[in-house]
Amino acid sequence: MRLNRFLAAAGVGSRRHCDELIAGSRVTVNGRVCTDFSYEPAATDHVKVGNRMVRPQQQLHIVLNKPAGFVSTRSDPNARDTIFDLLPPHLPRLFNVGRLDAQSEGLLVLTNDGDLAQRLTHPRYKVDKEYEVLLDHPWDAELAPKLLRGVMLDGQRARLERITAVKPTLMRVILRQGINRQVRRMFYEIGYEVKRLARTRIGNLRLHDLPRGHWRPLTRAELKSLDSAR
Image (cartoon, rainbow, N blue to C red):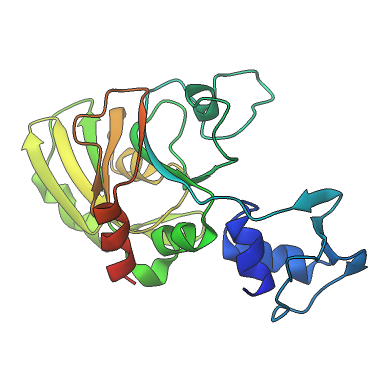
């Protein structure tokens, strides 16, 4: 197993993040800095990131139904509740795949599998993220082409893949990008305030009847569907 995959399997982060750590000389093997991406650690090697010893751990993939009011981070300097407060302490160290802002809710994937995180977030895999969006006033269908063509956010074109009106103020949208607070900001650009935002699907993953604030492991069928999407 190559060094970046070894680190990702140990829950350090996505493979891209692990590549950055290796390139930045943050990784040592048996006390020496290792920048060789092709190096394959042996069972007897001592691998560290900074001062932290890294050991492979059992892979775990879970789905969390995030409530509003929780931040998508492990710790928060403002002492707000985090999504990890919703998990039991005995679980392996996990990281969230993508984020939902504090007031948004719905489906989050947490894992210690960097390969899975890469598949769900890298643009080349074109994984759909579906959201239900409650607006502050009725939707004007003539504005849909603008969101489908895209608006400029942070110097890049943010666009929706699909937009459907469910009720006069309730929309269902699909996107494949991951710009910060993208859905809220896109609707704001065309004169709407998002009153409620909930992610309902990532790829083939859905919450089904999972209660808000609860989690469950991904099923074998769900993991297989993600593998087949590569």
